Length: 98
Figure 1 (cartoon, rainbow, N blue to C red):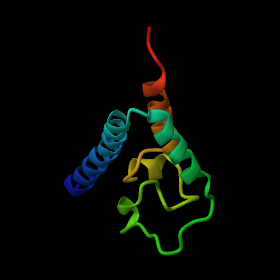
Figure 2 (figure 1 turned 180 degrees about the vertical axis):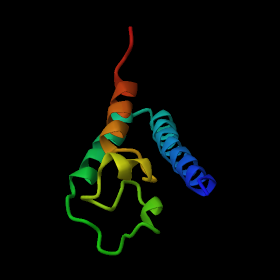
Figure 3 (figure 1 turned 30 degrees about the vertical axis):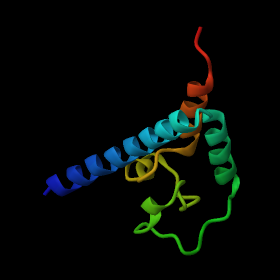
Figure 4 (figure 1 turned 180 degrees about the horizontal axis):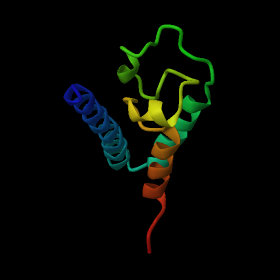
C-alpha cells in the first residue's frame, strides 16, 4: 500500500534533481550562470497564477506555475525545486573560487 506513494515521492525527487542538472548544464553551455539566474528571477517575479496550469501540466513549465501553493509538504510533491534554491545554486556557479 505504501509502495506507490514511496515510488511517486522518489520519482518527483528525481524530477527536481533533473531541474538542478538542467540549470547547471545550461549555465555551462552558455558560460553565463548569472544570466540564467536573472531570467529565473524575472519569471519568479510574475505573481499572477496561470489560469491554464494545473497539477497535470505543471511539469511542462520552467518554473512552478501553481503560485500560492508553496509549502514544505507541497514541495515534497513538486516537480520543480524551489526557485530561490535554483537561483542560489546558479549564483554559486558564477562566483569565482580562488
